[in-house]
Image (cartoon, rainbow over all chains, first blue to last red; front, side):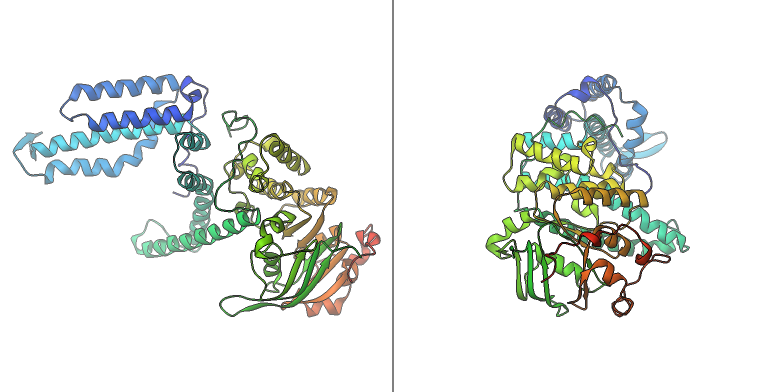
Length: 237
Length: 260
């Protein structure tokens, strides 16, 4: 956190999946997720089918699987929870590797893991093949309320700024003998997160001032005048 | 005499917490002038700037832009006429791409389509940033972001450009490039700065604000060489810099219309 560019999800490429219109990709993702969630968890082979479909899409997109795998660590808390369920759930017990676990719990854990993993992998694939700006444009085309799209846009814009600010705060703290890994210092970390919140809030106020200064009245004007945003000559970084 | 672009009379302002920042400021800026607004930290410079486009409302006194009073019913037009470039470009550039950001101001004033596109490209061209038009602002260097921030305001075709600390945090090359850009613009400029050599280089006229009042108004060269005035207002020249030995100063072209 705060170091490097771990939150960057987009993988630059020119595959058919990259070129597909963003709103279609978002629709496909939502439909896929709804189908996965609605599938009874006992239909084991069907989940293998879902995974195969995803694998084909990923193969076509030419995003290296390792690239997605690294970013799947966001799922870790859910995995931990899923692994816990068979031990704490009630019901008929069964033996797995010599350990007695709850049978319905085991099934629940499987459902959680399978559906969660498919969801995370599918979302990462969308993020890897679609620029954030294109996702926003797609959401707008899908009639997502303008205010929500605006908020998401600002989030994307300022994620880097706020992370960089946190990074600078951590460097400043480290330079004065602070060790973020030591639990003794966690209260300081909590306070600095509070300070970061205040700073971000104040930045929000300054941004709002700058917007008012250029005639903002509550709705973002339609600035899409020139060529479509699909063409990003320099988007590769 | 022609109507001044900026006409501030007896402006006073106290913040809601009771802190009074301005005590009757008088300032007139005429078309085509480049004026530096100098003063120590806490002199009220930013407060004054925020009155010029109606972000803050005058406690007493008036502000008029080319004869148009800064009042609630005129705010949209006032904000088009007065382009404020804030100090931190990250506060100014909030849209996902440079193009959208520069288009934001004119689009708010109803410019659309090809007209909007023309304005965006023209503004970016003035600051030499056309090649970066489809980049996200946060992928630019600090100096480039500062230039795009200037373009976002130029796209509104303002009558006066108000810059808050334009040279802060710039490396010497970016600082000089920005000076070249500002000199090339055919627009009235009010520049808030602590960078006195920059003020001397760019602005024939300077105004010193201290404790919420204007304490000096004259040729930048004369103010910077007035040691008593400088000391009294916590203004200091950087080490080794002496305006008396700098050749080719803009004070030679001081417009006869400056001041009152």
